[in-house]
Image 1 (cartoon, rainbow, N blue to C red):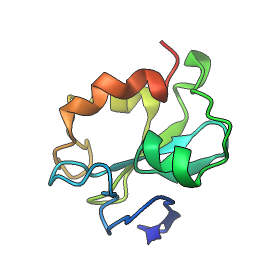
Image 2: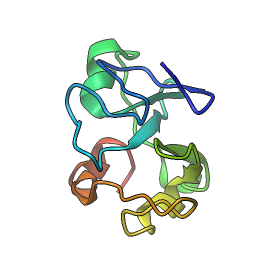
Image 3: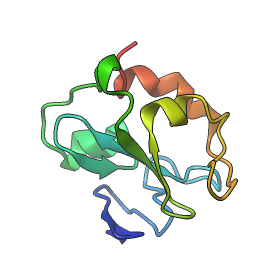
Length: 109
C-alpha cells in the first residue's frame, strides 16, 4: 500500500500503517527494514511477506530515516524515533510506547 508517498508492505495495512498484527489507534508507524530498504508495519509482516533475511540497523546508521509516521507521513531518523517519547515530532500523534519492547528486532542495541 502507498502511504504518504511511501510503499508499506504487510498484511492488511491500513492508511495509517496499522496491520493485521498491530492495529490499535496508536499503532501508526512503519519501520524501514535495513535488509531490504522497505517499510513494514511490524516484524511479523516482514517475516510473512518480506525478504527472508532480517537484519537490524547498525548503531552507526541511526542517523538514517527509517520510521514513517502513519498519521502525517513524516520520516524520522532512528535516533529521532528512539528519543521522541512515542510522539511524532511533526504532527504530535501518539505512537505505541509498547513498540520499545521490540526494538531489538529492528535496531542494534
